[in-house]
Length: 279
Image 1 (cartoon, rainbow, N blue to C red):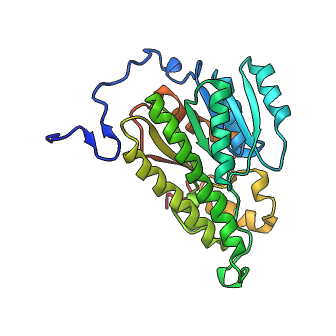
Image 2 (cartoon, rainbow, N blue to C red):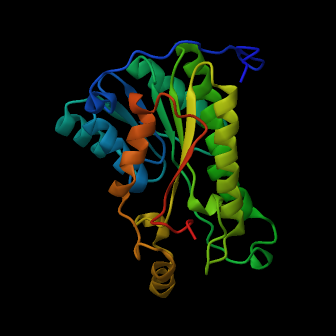
Image 3 (spheres, rainbow, N blue to C red):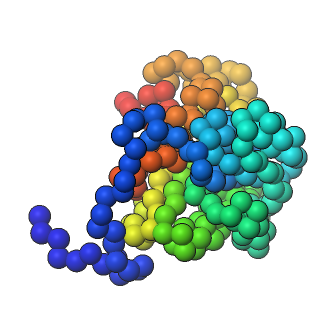
């Protein structure tokens, strides 16, 4: 293979040198000295990720909208000896997202890791029976796709200025397959869009930042509280591991993508789904 150019036409020269890395594998996974921010982190997957990052030594900012999270930020700070702060923002509002990201940069001095995690489910069943004014569709896409793009648009500028950064999207196995037995075509389509946005930005941002996504399967969080027990029992029959996951079973994947252990990983999507997509 002959490399004829080291130029990315979108953003300029590509890096040509490998990074200097720690020799100990545990040090590669350390986040000491780094600043991480996680949207949708007042609970569920987002909070589990934020706490894991704090445990790994990162200063952490957590985002919330309807559920105040100042107490959780205080807990992380006192428990793990790091700086933590909570920020209220509507992820579907581009101006609020931009304002919040720049405020975090000002408060912490930099941002090394950004997890675009906030998302909502589709709960209206079959599309043809859903709201004829398309409000449910718009709501899911405003949060799950537009909100993710708003985050990327602003954090990308900060990463480019810094010369490095790691952006991680929370996608879903629903971006790979059509779930059964529930009907949720708009959500599936939204998460497929997130995965492809991640891969596309990985190419665009290669000279200065890495972009990856994680696709969780069924996780025990509040986002699935609306699902009847009998439907969950059908899920368990399809999932090779036979159960839903704890949020903590995802954090290793996020830590990998956030840390120096993954400096050669970009444009990847990591499925953590108990084998659901394997058949």
